Image (cartoon, rainbow, N blue to C red; front, side, top):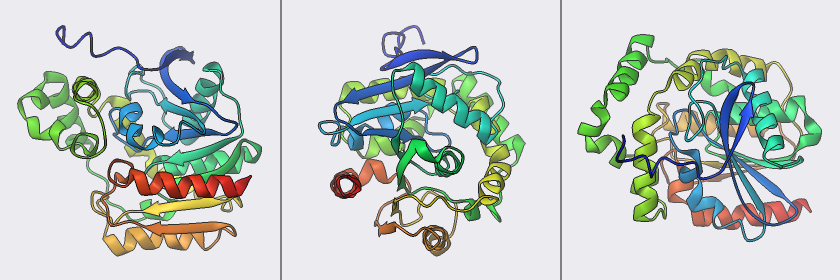
Length: 287
């Protein structure tokens, strides 16, 4: 860990939210701010999204909020209910100098937070561009791993077991795909060894059904939505079911589109060029 100390330095701004440090990475220029929101367990959101947002930052402002327990943010024992998580995200952006309204780019589980954001603060969300984004129905019948399994993975990561099994980190989508340089991959690995199955990540999974139910209790936000849907690999859910969940949700949104991609769950690491092109067209049409 001492040898990796030079690699484990925040890439963005560090802000203090409710007594704990959170990382907010920003770059780019433009009138529209795009907020990238990581799915559950994504160890380094800033680097995971880089292949995609680097293709958009010439025309738009980019912000990546790393939730508690992710990336360079602090590991803190705080509630992971959707209200707490959303308020932390909003405050972190504000402290980093970013102001709404935003176009949200949620991946996977962060889709719940994005939808709830649009429900609770409709004036702050211009549109949602889902990166294989989860919807409430996806969690209704899903079988979550037991707490024992999570605790074993967490303990193994703390003991450094992940360092002795290179296939763990080398199997990460940002390493296998994307456009990270060798140096950025080294940073990613340093983050991975420190942010695998952190306590906040585990708490998020354990409460995800409650969060999904809270989103489901409100009508679908009637704002423009563009969903990029994967082939289901890596979701833990049947391919057709996963794709159908998103399709069914979007049928209740007046201004919505769904783009099917032949890619695994981390679409931002494998279909970044296609997503960037179509996202830019979508955003320009909003104007």
